[in-house]
Image (cartoon, rainbow, N blue to C red; front, side, top):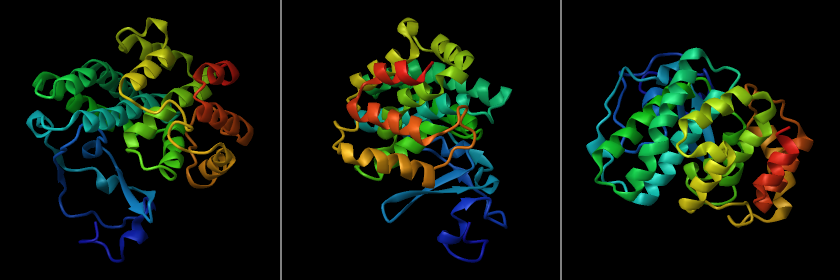
Length: 276
C-alpha cells in the first residue's frame, strides 16, 4: 500500500482510508486460519493492541492454496489458526450484512472445518485434512467480507490483557457471542448445527466440547484475567470495537453480564440468561 500511497501505516488504519490501489497483490497462505487471501482486512499490532486496516484495495488479484505449505504446522498452531477460521465462518453468518453468497460460503467452510480441523490436528501429514482446513479457511475468508460480530470484539479485549493466539481468544468468545445473539438468529443456529458432526446436543455444547478438547481456556479466570477487569473489558469493547452489524443491539448491561459469565466459564448460565 505504502509503495503507491503517501504517508505512513498509521494513516491507513481504519476503514477505506487508502486512496490509490497497491502494487499487484498475490497471497499464498502458510496457515489455514485468517483467510486474509480472500479478504479486505489486515490486522496490525500497535503498542500491543490490534488495529484494523479495512479496504477493498487489500483483496488480492490471486490466491494460491497449497496444502503442502501448511502440512508442517505444529498441532497447537493448526488448532489456533483453524479455530480462527471457524469463528469467521460462524460470525459472518450471524452478521446483518450477510448475503446469500456469504452465507453459503460460511456453511461450506463450517462443513469442511468441522471435520478436517480435528483430523489435521491429530495427523498433520493427512493432506486431505490439510486441504480441507486450507479451503475452509479460504471460504471463511470470503464470508468474512460480510464482517464479523461481537465475538471478535470480545476476543480483542481478551488479547489486550493476556498473550494468547487470536484463534484461541476468538474460540473462547464464540459460544458466548452465539448466546448473546441467539434470540435473533435461530435459523442461522439451525443451519450451523446441520453442518457440525455430532451437534445433535446443540451448537453451544459442540463448540464447548471442541474448545475443551483443544485446551482452550474455558473462562477469563482460567486465562489469568482478574474479575476486576470485567467492567473495563465491557467498556473497552464499546469504545474501541463497535459492531454495527451485530444482530442484537449491544448494550452495556447485557455485555457486562456476558463478560461476567465468561469470566466464570459458566456458558449454561449465559445461555439461560441471554439466549431467550
